[in-house]
Length: 99
Image (cartoon, rainbow, N blue to C red; front, side, top):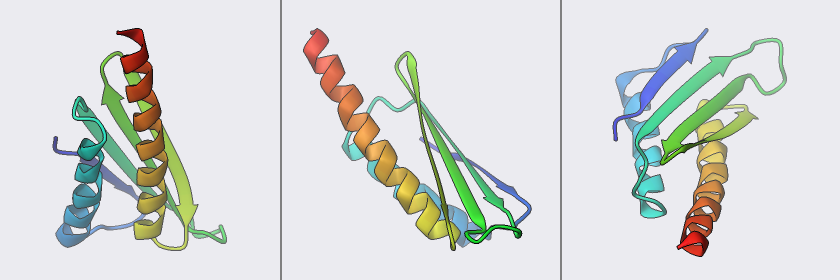
């Protein structure tokens, strides 16, 4: 699973992109059926919390998304990963109930 990382109105170094992909690979601990991951980091200078992060995860027949805003893009991505972790656990429990 190689995430597609997009930066809008900001620049991310290769080490920043590696750190983001490292955080996202931890999601496979909770559900290994992730097919695609897309990350969008956006900087809004007019806001109090300038970095917005959106992470979209595609799983079997479903798309899960997490968004967060924070003062640094690392903290915003961490908040998104935490929200997606909860969504993946809920999705996995729904799959188990059906079978």
